[in-house]
Image 1: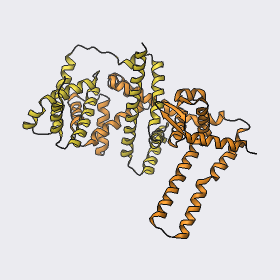
Image 2 (image 1 turned 30 degrees about the vertical axis):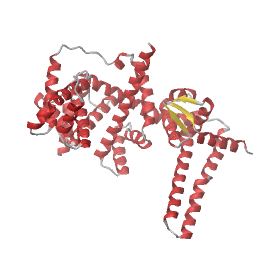
Image 3 (image 1 turned 90 degrees about the vertical axis):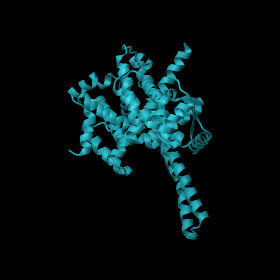
Image 4 (image 1 turned 135 degrees about the vertical axis):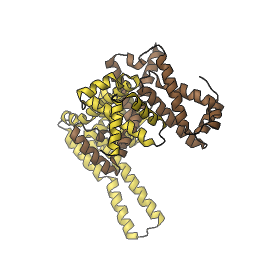
Length: 244
Length: 188
């Protein structure tokens, strides 16, 4: 057994309460005093994974009993377990969310509008401006600082626009739905948005985060609202949808 | 136990003569002591850690002059003493306030807090947590290996990155839960 595996096994045995008192104390002393952070980090990893395994039922009945009669009797550790459970619940919901969204979004007229929208979004400025700038840069071959800055600026802008588009499209266009709701209600908390859209909060989080990151939505003390850019984008979209 | 800023500064100086490194060492030792008391099933590890640090800080300037070795060894010895004293006290165990509310209510609150805190992570951190937590045990091992390779880091570095991200999330959710409780007690 490698040294690393042996250490991992030792920490696991400590956490399961399998070690005699003298060895327990040695582990604790190292935990507090070891100047190399590697041991403390390793300890945190094993502890975290053991709690994960407990929640997911990936440990034996014997180990489960040892944890319940030992480590988990610590209020602090018990609280950690609650967080692990909640995180697993969150992750399970988040993973389930996209398929639910696909199932629920089957309205007849929407696809044609969204298909048009998608083509407009992908044919819009960023891609073409990249192409133009690139060819211009190639023609000039100036390769001076100014040209380089212009090129980098355009790339940054294209990247930001791409993120903006993706944030609207994320989770089967949940981004647009959220933005429209926010425009309608002016400001809302995450919970109320999830409730308005009849979605689980965990499903809304990634889409809302993407909208916030791309500057379409602003957040202040847990309240979300449609930003100025968000309003401009929605107006533009409405114009496209209304156009013949 | 109260002590002055000078006393605290003496402790920091003992930990390291460089202010920045001293502050980092202080944070590290504090975190480790809290963990130590928590593993020993103490109901309030933070309080016992403060007690340990206070005792050492009050004598830090004297100890520093004569003590040979790492200050963390000294702090650990005092922590064990504080632990023994605590074990001798009559047990008055009270559940933390957030554990006293009904399970369903608490679960929902915690879940809402997680939602809010997820938004405070960066997109990369959120994706990392989701990608790391494959449900199937066999798939999980393979997925983690791939993930580490994609990020260009070792499996161990990936594991510690995930644990740290979860710690940030947990700390945020704990603060969020406390803030819920404060709001509720304000209403009463």
